[in-house]
Image (cartoon, rainbow, N blue to C red):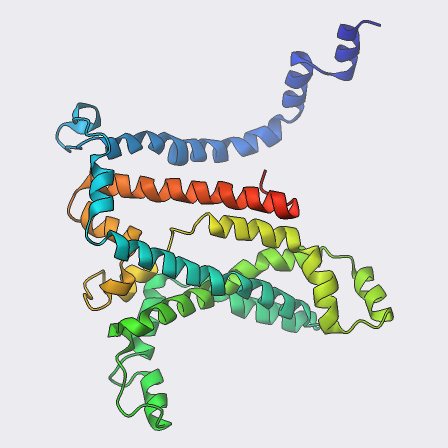
Length: 320
């Protein structure tokens, strides 16, 4: 039998591919709207990055605006706030990674140890509800709790005589990072734990039974069964978090600094996104804003490639 006949019999080739596509027409149709949305909102706007290399004029349009090369990148790198902005961005994102990454894993393991299904569901619901609370509401809550005039935190501290006078937490640079990171951990931990809860639920219960018969305590089972079983998911989430190392936040920082008007906090709160918003968007320097945003995206992509390569080399776990 010739190779062509074998390929036809096996359904290999253009005819086979077309037949397979036809048989999956319903599934392909379901995927199509998602692909169209990604194309329209993720790939088509990429053409706008050309603005970073032009002196964009809103009246002339993108095509008629003159080319300036790397001028806006140089302006961004040479700005007097560049070092401060990069320091704040890296510090805040690193603190969010340091405290925000392990928190969902720990919460998922703790929830898994709750044997009463009803109580587990109640605790899980309570922990992931903050994710659906708007940052506007969270900022309002923090402002009320930390207020100098009758704020709950200051009231407790003064009643316990920990502080003599109320502390203006939201206008004290030394407290800003702690407040910001704590709010982010509280808001995101429960929702992010869902990924690890799903991974833990897929572990074979017989492994725990065998470990229990061998004398392993519940605490030891976490380290010999639970964590090794969800290691792949942990590494993948870590890679994705590392790739966002320059995404220190925007909504949370902007709201906690009163739309960037709290000059006392800007020395520790000004990050790339808020700087681009203030200098690039509010001042209508669109080319400058695009250049700074493109710089951040390129660094994030490089960090993604680096983290993925290191993970693949050390633990044979990677995104691709």
